[in-house]
Length: 544
Image (tube, rainbow, N blue to C red; front, side, top):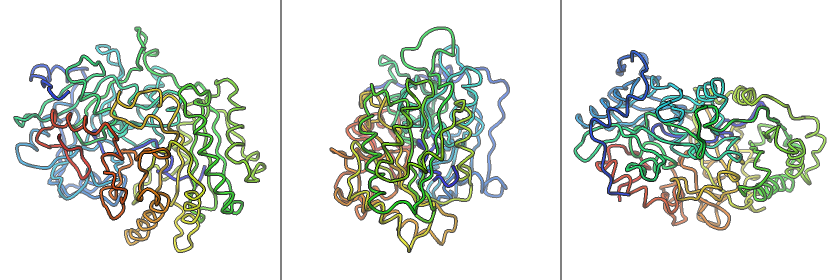
């Protein structure tokens, strides 16, 4: 699997946190909500100032382009500590942001305006909460720990992304996708409740628990945290997961059980075998297959894959595919899928020479992560853009990709278009208004990205990405306007250019591209739970 693009294989990562007449909890109820589990002695929060050697590590996330300069970083280990830190920020007039995994691709967490960063690294437990009958995951947990703990202790999982260091906070609040999502839904489709530190109109910070129960007076806050993106409403300190409709006393039956084994296929196709016609066929074949398999009832929902179409300097493009080995006709489903994608390319022998492996599910999770070194490379700078697709790319759009990926004045093998089959299937069984995630009828989505190390290469990489994306979406003003073919952009891949009319010439505002018709309701939730705009960034939701 060497050479696969890091961002091209994610189900998503973003900034950490993340009806109008809502009555907030009183102080007693809020305090009780934080005593969900006796965690034993909790370490005092660490305050890291610029003179501390840790400061440089705690003021930058995965994307090395964005470096913060806060007065200090507060590393917390409990909800109470988060409440105290937020209250301090409010009382002293400091702009505050929170970080979970640090994978936000835009400068939402780390920027010159933020004067206090709350790092949730010490708030990272994963456990079963008998009081709520759900699995609690604290806001600073990383996906690798979540998967390992849930599966080893109870045989369950959430259908999240592939990168092991992504934090649960941003991943969940943006929706959360991965290889199991077509089979089991998005991460938020299993979200039972959230604990959020908010600030009311009286400038008082407090913790609120909001649930998926429509009768919960704080249900609208749960709804907004289920797809509304991180950093908008407060600091999410805890998530509770339980699959809807699951009941009983056995924790192992209350959340989805991943496949015992999966078929994992990694096929590299040499660029030397792809001319413009064959590349176009690969892209349009991909879209056609996922169009045909987008329905929630499709038997093909047991299979999901990505196509990492890296720049020609990478020498190969890759097809990475996973299928539930216990699904009826799983081997035939996988072979038929690869045959459909490569039809007309003349690469049958290449595909046959790279057979699939049958692996235990957790082995596959680890193998994918270990096979992509850039998942944990702390030196990378990056830029990315996204698009949801209802229908396949046209030959003209595929040709625009081909031109960009074969440019001779740009030779970065990390520049890529990644077609991600993490939409459709069970995700589309949920109405677009049930959660804040509005993209419920897409067939697949796409990540356009590039990564590099040298700051001197910023301009050439960012320029290449803008040229590529603008050319693919030239017919709709440079962005994937929701319509017959496209369905907007993914908030967990935030794009700084989306607000700039020089690049977004579509006339469609960024709020619509991210949230579609759900944005007005998100604004009402913002007004109810963050009326003073304490939690904000360059693309944050504004109050109605």
